[in-house]
Length: 161
Ligand code: FES
Ligand code: FES
Image: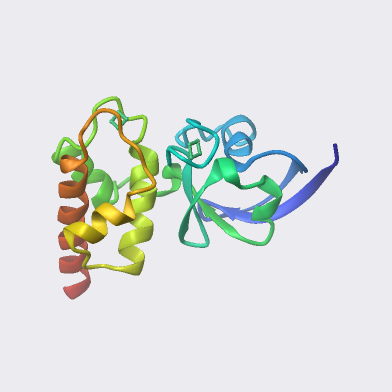
């Protein structure tokens, strides 16, 4: 199987990395980049645990080849905190107790980021739709929806300042 160099931006940093032609993005991130915040669950695009941002849009990294990142921008959960400060979505997940085991949490947060960048004022129904590709076996979703709604309101206030 072939190997090639790709050039892409990972969590704000330009990178040139060797990747195998058949390597999935989730494996590349976890094994080669040692970014283990991106979780590997079903590996068939169903659970959302592996969700990352590709050019700002939520994608399941188990369904993407690493070579597809060439020329694009990738953000993982490790790149969400800025200058040591938690993103409002991360903070609200903690403050609203929106996680238990935490396995789904990175993917949920990446989907929430994608949703709020497209729709800063989502209804509850739109939040539920936005995370419909992310499965949580622990929380029952109510706290997750509450956390995203609260983060959206905090972010809207920050923009209005
Ligand atoms: S591991 Fe990618 S969607 Fe489940
Ligand atoms: S908090 Fe455990 S799977 Fe969501």
